[in-house]
Length: 213
Image 1 (cartoon, one colour):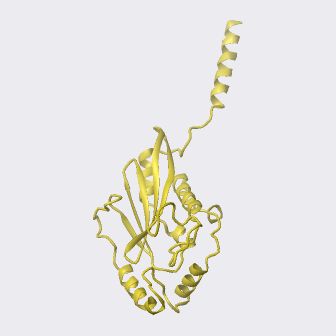
Image 2 (cartoon, one colour):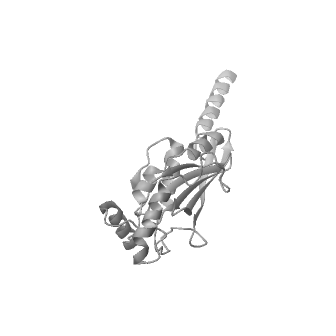
């Protein structure tokens, strides 16, 4: 009888363990999460949200703490996505998009409540960034349907149409109709060269890898 009771108790204990909630976060180590986000290719995110002005993506970070994805245009940083990492345990890590900052103003950038004279991406952008983070850390494809729908933006539509049609290429440095062509030429020269030399430290986010659009 004692043996039977011991077996039953052991079975109940094992059943209880199997129903325990899974640890929060992604099932990868902190170092793995950092390396995946640090080496991210942002092409799919930027392609689907592009607004027709020349842009670059620069990826940098602070090992074991955070990764910064930067969107640059006209020689300057226009938008930054900061992803903070935290270990849950030795094999699980959380990743949180803590800040989306725009050059033009304080507060969250490209959240759908701001007007940009020369937008670089469609907004709101947060859901798309969070989907990109999740796809990288889950080891799967980026799913556009999970990235949310952008709001209507006539300026972005005109810029993209001009770029894709070849009629005119807009620039974040435009100051009026007469400067569109000249500033676009400056952007083309800037886009042809990296914004930072390979290995040159990013003052805000370590050593970035730069990709040109």
